[in-house]
Image (tube, rainbow, N blue to C red; front, side, top):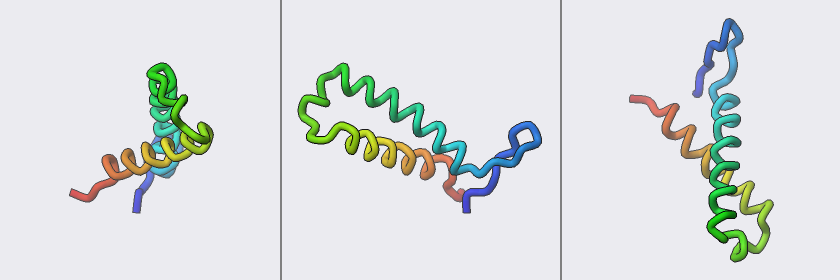
Length: 68
């Protein structure tokens, strides 16, 4: 489905690499949204952060694992 990525002779699942990338992107988005004042309107910030991570991971997996 996703395949593997060769990192210096170590084969890593693509989903693992995308997960690390999604964590970084979701944290940056969370900080930007916090500075913009969005978290004042969020009922449960940790749940919002989890949903943001899942959405970013889904977008990254869609972008990088499409079959052309």
